[in-house]
Amino acid sequence: MHWYLEVVKKYVAFSGRARRMEFWMFSLINFIIVLALSFMEGVTGIGGGLLSSLYSLAMILPSLGVTVRRLHDTGRSGLWILIGLVPLLGFIVLLVFMCQDSKPGPNQWGPNPKESGAGMVGSAA
Image 1: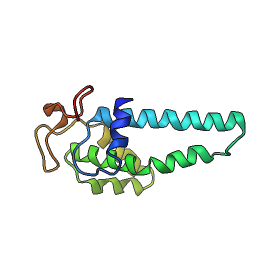
Image 2 (image 1 turned 60 degrees about the vertical axis):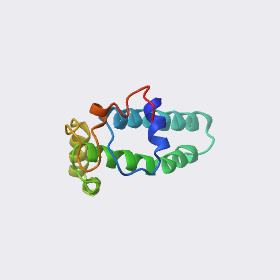
Image 3 (image 1 turned 180 degrees about the vertical axis):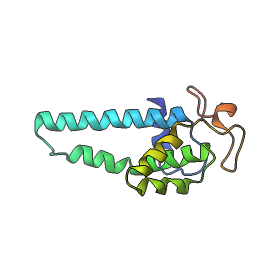
């Protein structure tokens, strides 16, 4: 839950770098929350998808922010996120980028969060 909350705290932070763990844990917890909301709406019949839609809308900027920071961590510009607009191929390319390891050492977007200890569980932010 730490990783999820850290991304939400950095709501519109598009600068810096994000580790793979930060990106994937945020994505996993976000997915679980959407599933739970959708399940509750389906079982109760209340909301008609409104709750999960509102939640998804609220998470657009944090999701974009962590994706851009993850691209920075792999040594790419945040503009690479636009490749996702290409049907199917764009999703595959972004998935490969998100799975790649961090570029070692600092780059133009900041120090490597793995090497500096920033973004580690339990570290002071």
